[in-house]
Image 1 (cartoon, rainbow, N blue to C red):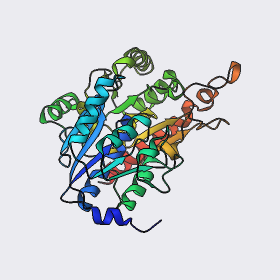
Image 2 (image 1 turned 60 degrees about the vertical axis):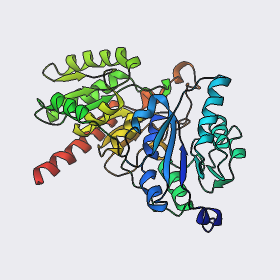
Image 3 (image 1 turned 90 degrees about the horizontal axis):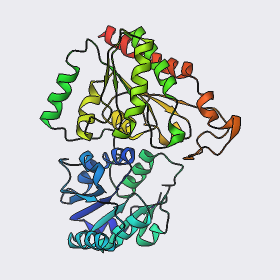
Length: 360
């Protein structure tokens, strides 16, 4: 690691811009960078450029001066308006933590005297940066890349907790919803944007239904509006497998802040590799993560409190959004990753919680 760059040492920035528009999980994992930036540059005011659909992850954060929502609209008018807005802030230091052409253009639009990016930059984004943080390639997990950024800036190492500003109304809503539970519920997010991440709903039902019965836990189904049909199928399967079980379906019915309010009340989150997985982990909720086309090492949350289970097929962790195989090998990872293996992980996690609760 090179010595701390003289330009950073002497700059003492008054205005810092973090450019990290997406995705859900990456934004969550970047939030812990804020307190160490504030400790390193206590006089600085920090702004964050984020996709408008994710701004509620950041709105109200006590360490942010402002959130600048980014609309992904391909129009010259919108681009020029955003560029003028960024230029008007007179940022001293810009961190492009996304590394795409559009975020490189945003960084350049600020005209900041120091613009820093990471080695993951592509589409020519690195040309808009003055410096690139070493050892921040794509093979490194997000939280480790951010640790390298913090080290490069002379900051302390960031933690893993993400502070989300949850309103009192959202806390009351979560309290009321879970108030009738005799024990913390198992949250389930069986969807995913990538087809290759969507472990079969029947297997989710087999794992969750057995755990609900054995540990006497209710279940809470989570997901986006587009995943309501998926969750309806899961809800029906759970009722068939465990008719006495309590199932609450919140799919498509929660805001981001409501999701952040309800997750800490859960015993665990059973999930594919998704943004809510990282939100749960960042809020201190242990997860049972299912990994088919992605790697739990690169994409999973840090910490030994989680149970991360991955497929063993040859193309595992290929990060393909569509299965590259056809015929009998099409989505072979779904078949290879058995519900028994994931159920064993769920049992280990819930058993640890039971023993800890009994010891207390």
